[in-house]
Length: 289
Length: 289
Image (tube, rainbow over all chains, first blue to last red; front, side):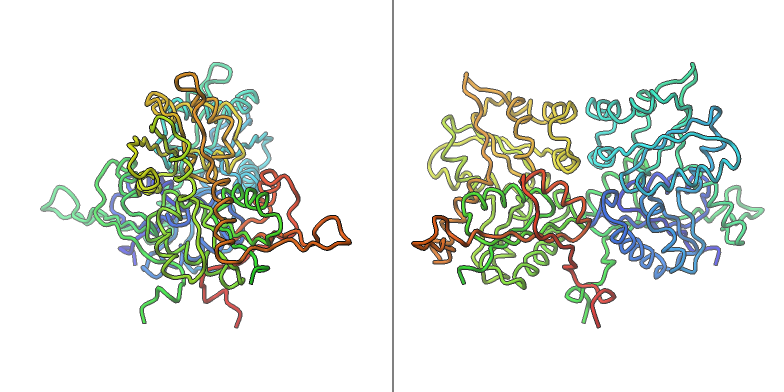
C-alpha cells in the first residue's frame, strides 16, 4: 500500500503549486496529478457542476489506484469536499483546512484577509474554517473574490503591469482593513506572490503575512500518511549513501497537453517525465466498442 | 418550416451580441440560443476538444428543430466549422465569414488588424478569409491574441481602468502598424467597444474602423434565409396596424443560469422570457432510465 501514489487534482495548472510542495516535503512519494484542462476554470461555475466534475476527477484517480486524495483546488474544496468524502473510501485532504489552520496560527491582530475565486468566497467555507481553527479567539475576516487572477496566471501574466494594476484594484480595500495576514485561497495565487506581496504591503510597520496553503497542505499530507501507516519510507542500505527510491510524478490532463506542459515546467522548474491526455467523463460516442 | 427557430450558439455569453443583432435585423424570427457555460471558455482549448463541444452544442439545437445554425463564436468558427458542415444537414453561417467580408469592404489602406482568442489567431482562419474576400487587392493583416478580454467581459469589467490598461497592452502594437480597420474577431469584444475604440484611436486623422461581425452576420443570416425561402414573414392584416407574430427568444445554458441571466439582461437590455439549464453531453449516470 505505502508505495502506491498520492492522487492530487485541480481544474488546471493551479494545483501544481501543491504538487511542488508535496514533492519537496515527501521526496520518496509517488504522485499522480490530474488537471481537468478541458473544463477549466471551475471558479465561476455552479455547485452542481463543480460537484459532478470533482467526482469524475476523483474517480479517475481512484481507478489509477491512489492511496489518498489531495484536493489541490480551493473551489473544489469549498464546494465538493463533503460529496467526495461521502463517495470515496480513501483518506482525503483538501487545501482549505491546512490554509485556514495556518492563518489562525500566524495572525497576531486577528485581522485576516482571504482572497479566492467567486465560488469559494460565496461559499463562506474559509470564514467557517478559520473561525473553527481560531476556537475562542476573536478574529475578523475580510474576504474578496479576485476573478481575474486565475486568467492572469493561466496566461503567464504574473509579473506585468497588468498584474500589478489588477492586484491594486482587488487588494486596496483589504489593505485599508489593516489585516496582518492574507490567505491565498486559490492554488493559482502563489504564482502571483511577488505582486500580491508588494501590493498588500505592511500594516503597523510589519509586512502582511501571506499564507500559501500549498506548504501547509504538504505538511498535513505527511501527517495524514503517517497516521494511516502509509508513508513511503526511503530504502536505506549500508552500501549506498543515497536512498534508491526517489518518488516519481505522472501527469494527466483532459485537454491541450502542450499548453499544460509549457506552464507546468515553468511552475515546477523541472522536466515532466510522463504527461498524458485522457478522457475522464462518460461519452458513449468516444468509448471503445 | 419558415416559422421554425434559428439556432444560435456560443461557449458562453459572447454570442448574445450576435443574437441581439439578429433580433434587430429580423424581428419576426424565433430564436433559440445555447451558451455552453459549463465548459466556457473555449478559446485556449485544443481543436479536438473544441470540435467535440461544438458538435454537442449543434446536436442539441438540431434536436430542438431549428431551421438554420448560426455559429456565434469565432473560436468555434475557426476550429470546427468544417466538421459541423459535414455533420449537420442544415444551412450554416459562422461569424467569421461575414466579419472578414465586411473588413475587406471597409478598409481603404488595406492595413487590417484582427484581434481574437489564442485558438482563433493560431488557426489563421481570419487571414485566409480576409484574403479571399479581398480577391486581387493587396492587404496586410496584423493579428493579435487578446486572451484576457474574454475574462474581462465575463467579469463585467468592460469600462474600468483595468480594461483600459489591458487594451493598451494588446492594441499598442497594432496602433503602430497604422491599421485603418480592426476586426473584433471574438463575439465578446463588441462589449469592450468603447475602450477598444479610444485605445486604438486614429490613423492619418481618421478613426480606425471597428468591424463588429455581429451586424454583418445578422445581415447575411437574412440573405441566407431568403435564399432558402425560410424567412418568417410578418403576418399583416387589414384590421391590425402591427404584425402579430413578433419573434420569441428561448435561452439554454449548460450551467449557472443565474449568472447568465444577469449578464444576458445587461447585454440584451431586455428581460429573458425563457431560460433553462440543460444537459447536452452524454453521461450515463445522468440519463433517465
